[in-house]
Image 1 (cartoon, rainbow, N blue to C red):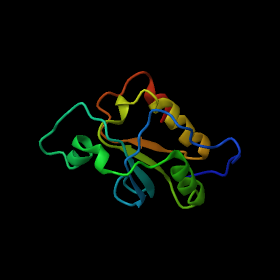
Image 2 (cartoon, one colour):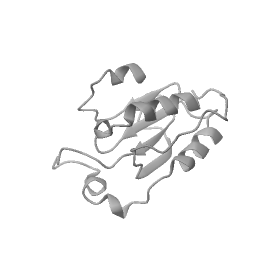
Image 3 (cartoon, helix red, strand yellow):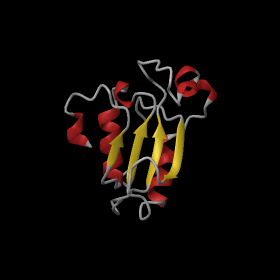
Length: 128
């Protein structure tokens, strides 16, 4: 659940996270939760069964979502959403992922879920 926070402090700043897709209200990505799912394009695997292969192979075909767009959506829907799901690709390839998760939590997201976090390390689980 998103909590009301100080809107002056709580914004997502630019970092090395490149968002190439968004599902504003997903009922499928996190069982029992209503979440916004965001898609990041990097991946160090080329799985033949990947359902996001085009995002991985041709990320330039997809419009980038700016931090301010994500900010607006999350703030506008904070009373409706239970959290944010980050998928891709491989989200843990981004150096700024920890900072990004902290920004999501500062914005009011109590829950953040990483899907396909093969490289989960560096105490990242402490930030989820």
